[in-house]
Structure formats: structure tokens, C-alpha cells
Amino acid sequence: MTQAHTIHPLLESLDLVNHPRVVTDIRGDETHESDNMVVVRAPATNQPIAAVTLDSAESYEDITIRSVEAFKKWCTVPAPARGDLVRRIGNAYREVLEDLGSLVSLEMGKIKAEGIGEVQETIDIADFAVGQSRMLYGKTMPSERPLHAMKEQWLPLGPVGIITAFNFPNAVWGWNAMLAAVCGDSCVWKPSLLAPLTAIATNTIAQRIAEEAGHPDLFQLVIGTDDVVGETMIHDKRYPLISATGSCRMGRHVGAAVAQRLGKCLLELGGNNAVIIEPDANLDLALKSTVFGSVGTAGQRCTTSRRLIIHESIADDFVAKLVKAYETVRIGDPLDETVLMGPLRTEGSVEQYESAVAQAKAQGGELLTGGERHNPGGDCEGGNFVKPTIIRAPKDNNLPIALEETFAPILYVFTYTNLEDAIDMQNNVDQGLSSAIFTGASASAERFLSPTGAGSDCGIANVNLGTSGAEIGGAFGGEKDTGGGRESGSDSWKSYMRRQTCTINHGSELTLAQGIRFE
Image (cartoon, rainbow, N blue to C red):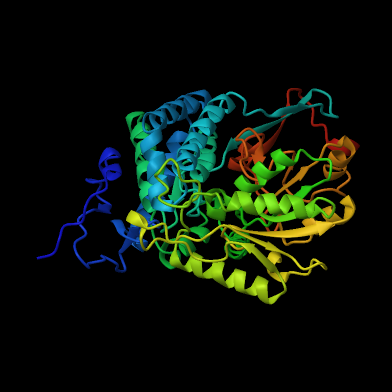
């Protein structure tokens, strides 16, 4: 007789036990893995949490048709009224903040504080979107023709396809969906198969609020494999915008497919982010920021600090302190509030970590700390844990593996003599997401932020704070292989709308532009 699988209390508190897509009765060695179902395993234990049913080509088609119809109705709702619905969604997330954040930690592996912080991001962007719903501004322009007026307005775009990665299974959807909703768009979300439970819990709440307001198909979820669902979505003309978050390799494929049908693409891809530390910097601040930026989320953020570029005069002392700080980081169960670093998401991630460490050593890098698996013991036996790692580059700074993005807590250390060389070194990677400098000199800060383009080439450039932890008020995104997309704050709302230029003749004569006469 097989033993019943223990249902995690978070599934009960978030009403997932009776959800039609969630199978919690997993017994013995039965995995429920099949063409139409995926098992979700906790990365801290590699034990199953639940199974989730997958969408077929037929269910994808039904979801898309309903999203198209939902858009036709939703786009006619006044924008401030759309904002009121988003306000109610944000308030609903406030009521489940701790439980939903804890589910993020259970399923993805980031520590509880970060899981809760991620859901708080969705709440914050909902608040931002409510205000934005009254500020979808166009422009008025003077016409060169008498008795003519010109204006520019922004109109709803259509159903938006949102493809998210495993590392932010709640917030990245929130950045997109809350803004898209106030802009008048319907949303279809394709989450990572590594984090579908968070997506189901998140989307169910938004869908319930929308249904109560008479818009039951406004927020929809399509959970499926890339070949059945993903490929179909990115080639589907019914989605005028595809917002995709993931690897650079994935982004190139998505971008090419969407461009081929002349659709719009919003890409948020990888980052190989560097921190520059000048000799006159506040080194205590730089130390704390570097540890959080490189160790937070076990290095599984696109904004993770992956390269430290430090002035040669302070390198030895600073790196020694950094190593000591790394060795005090408590690793273990991400739901334990005393833990500072949880596991990597999959066994494959652990293997990539080990491969990168081996390559770095073969290329002349010096392993200063970490570089191996970690077993916290107890309930976390068998989890995907590794030690945070620091590798110092050779004196000639030639370490090719550092030019690649490894989604793991590995920090490569380089030294420099002058700031221009440091900035060049920072920019000398394919990605251009986030960057940081620690300095006490305004001249160095201004050089780093140079408006001529001679400074950081990243979409995010920070002074005296690290590469990770962006606020929702600013546009988030990067350049080069990071994709060029912008989400969240500032004027990112424009990605979810179409621009229309309008000219009105309020006279009785035909007057042509550029002085053309046609009589």
C-alpha cells in the first residue's frame, strides 16, 4: 500500500488543493509526469509538491479566442475604471502577501524575505498602474495648415502574451499585466514549467477580481511546453505584443519569430553585471552591497552581480573581507527566516555551476571560497544547494568564462588601474542590463554616467548601490543582448499601447501640407 503524499499547508491556504489544474494526491513513486502533466518539485528537497496539468493545442486556441473577445469589451472601459479594477487586484494580493511570497520561496527557492518582496513588487506596480490609468497622455502639436489641429493619442493594443522565467514567478507578470490592464489590453500568461503553482495562485486571484467586475477572461493562464504552447503563441498574429523574459538564446528566437510577423516584442533577457569599486569608496557599503548583489536569490537574478572590478590598490584587503563575509552566509531551507541563501532551482543548474567553476580554474582563475555543493542536512537533504563562490582572475584579467552568464552564485574578481579601463572592462560583455560604481568622487560618478555614451552601456547604472534590487518607479531593462525592452515604471506603459496621430480640419477648404497645390 502506497503512502499518501503530504499536502503542503501553503497549497491549502492559497486554495490550490481543489484547483482543477492542480493534483496534490501524489503517492509513493508515482510522478504523474506525462505529456499532459508536470510534477513540481521543491528545490530545497527535490521532493514533489504537486502536479499541474498542461494545456493542449486545443485549449490554447480556446484561451486565445476568449482573450480576443475579452479585449473587445475591456478596451471600451474608461481607463480610470480599468485602474480601479487593478487597485482591487493589488489589495487582494495584500491579503495573501506572506502566503503567496512563501509559495514563491517553496517553489523557486529564493529566501522568504525575497519571496515576500517579490509579491510586494506586484502590489507596488498595481498601485503605480492605478495612477497611470489617469495619465495615458498624448500630445497636441501645432499644424502648419490654417484651421487644422493635430494631436497624438494612445490606444489599447490587444491581447498581450506574457512569457515569464522561473526566477521571478510573480513579479515579472505583475510588471506586465498591471500596466497592460490599465492600458486596455487582455493578458495571456505562459509561466515557466518550473514555477506553475505560483502562477496559478497569482492568476486565480486576478481572474476572480476581473470576473466579479464582469470581465472573466481578462487574465488567463496557458501552461504548456514550448513546442505545443510557446511556439504557437510567438507566431500567433492575434498577439500584437509578446513580452518575454528569459535567456538571451530564448530571446533571439522569440524576437525573430515575432519580427517575422511584424509584431511587437518586449524582451528582458540575461545580464552579466559588474560592480566597479574606486579607492575612495565607502568600502563597508560596497562590501554589503556586493554580497547581497552576488549571493541574493543564489545568483539566479538577471541583475545578479557576477563581476567585481576593483582598483588594484585596495583589492587584496577588500577581497579578504569579502571572502570572510561569504563564509558566514547561512545556506538552507528558504522558508527559514534565518537563512540568507536558498538552493538553485534544478539539478541541471548545479551542474552548470560546477562546470563554470571547473572552467574558471582551468583558465587560471584562483578559487578563493566555495566552488562545491553544499548539504545543509535535516529536511533539506537532497536539495540543490551550492556554496557561494569567489574566483579571482589571473593578473592579466584573461578569464573567458566570466564573459558568459552562469545562473549561480559565482563572483569573478578583476583589478584595474584607471577608471576608463574599468568601464571598458565592464562594458566588454554581450549583455547590458545592470551596472554599479562605488566612489566618493562626483567626477568618477559623472564619468560612469556620461551622457555622451562613454560611460556604462547598460540600461541600469547605479552609483553607491549594487546591481540588484531595482525600484518599480524606474523603467527596468537593458541593452545589447539583454534585448532592449523596458518594463515597470517611467513611460513603460507605452509598450502596451499603439500610437495614433490625428489631424482635424475644422475649416471648409482643402489645404495640403508642404504648400502643395492641387486644383
